[in-house]
Image 1 (tube, rainbow, N blue to C red):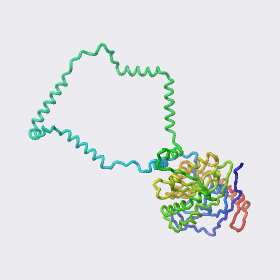
Image 2: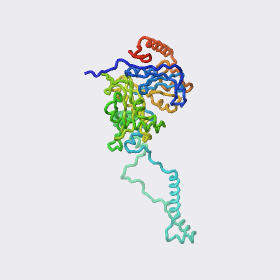
Image 3: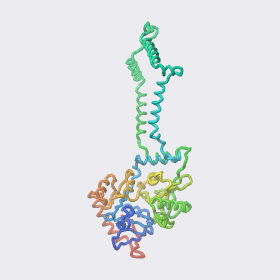
Image 4: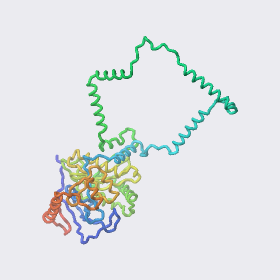
Amino acid sequence: MSMSRRQEFSIVEYFFRDSETGSRCGYCRSEDTNLSRGMWAHKLTTQDYQDLIDRGWRRSGKYVYKPTMDATCCPAYTIRCEVLNFKPSRSQRKIMLKMGKYLETGSVASEPNKPEDQTPKEASTGEVHMETKEAAVPEGQSSSCTKDGGAASSSINQSNSTRSSHKKSPRSGIGPDPSKPLQKKAKVLRKEKKQQKKQQGTSTEVKLESEATSHTQKSNEPKNIEDYLCEEGSSTSTCHKLKLRLVRSSPPSSEFQDTLQKSYLIYKRYQETIHRDPPTKCTLAQFKRFLCESPLEEEYADDGPACGYGSFHQQYWLDDELIAVGVLDILPHSISSVYLYYNPDYNFLTLGTYSSLREVAFTREIQKEAANIKYYYMGFYIHSCPKMRYKGQMSSSFLLCPEAYTWHPIENCRSKLDKNKYSRLDQTDAGKLQMEACIYAHLWCSQSLITKVQSPTSLLLCKTYK
């Protein structure tokens, strides 16, 4: 029986702007320099949303927006990671190992270092013992040494000279024992040992060399991200158990509804503690509107993942406690990260970076059953915002050119973005032709493929925009 169930169209309501007045920027805190275009998505197919994020759009709840890159104060570039080529960095490996240590021992603190004053103290104590030992004399001679130091020193010198005279007179010998074989020189012994090794045959040598080579290659091979995550809590006597649970948020599944209140309380604490939001902005209605409601419909395909496409919450359960939630969209070619919130009490586990690594591993796992899902989208990358730089530390990361809509390694983009906050990343002639083609396609799409319904601002997308 086929499990395919795909939506055929999308319905969005575009917000036309009469002026170019900006809004408050959450990154540079400017009041009116954040410029973007947006539309309210009543209904979106996962393929349409995949095409939209590949053109620089992004959703927040049901609101889909795109920064006006050449005019806004903080240009936001779409960033994605090729998960099949991902290799964890040293700092990322440390974060995973720290989590593994916490699961096994219940602590992340390193072994306590010795106090700084202990080493010199121990050294001085040793010197005192040595001096005491050299100066020690028998109890019976203590008074004589004190009263008549010269007599004591002369008696000691006399005994020392007697011992040295005994050492100088060697014993008379009769030479080597004739009944025993003569001892060979070390040079001859090394030569014979070398010949014996050659006589053992080349087969043993080849075997040893191959084993040594394979061991060296195996030890030099870098570990994948799964190797580090599998080591977490691998021991049977672990102190804590970490479990990840994926629940569909739109339409809400029974598991999602059962944990909604717990999830909301974590979100509220996170926003108030980490982002300093006032309690009036962290209501349950705002939480649902921001992170629970989604325009993406539930879809399935024969060649897709078993969980299907759409919007999900990935819950992190430590023992029986919910400590973090990652909001994800599973799309035809990628997994898109929407948001993460966690219990601030576990901030010492660096859950922001750790959850990103977990989501990369999850995308790699999904790719095994859905071959088309190869990318992990991390949202927007703002080069001028230091808090966003961590996204660029993910290996095999690419930025989307805001004009040609082509992907470029972030290593090749940093020098351009250091000079200018906004930059065209694709400098090739092919990229310029592709940009012109996108403009013509957009004009043709606006005239031919979009039918107005209900009101002048409501649009029915009858075909995927590319």
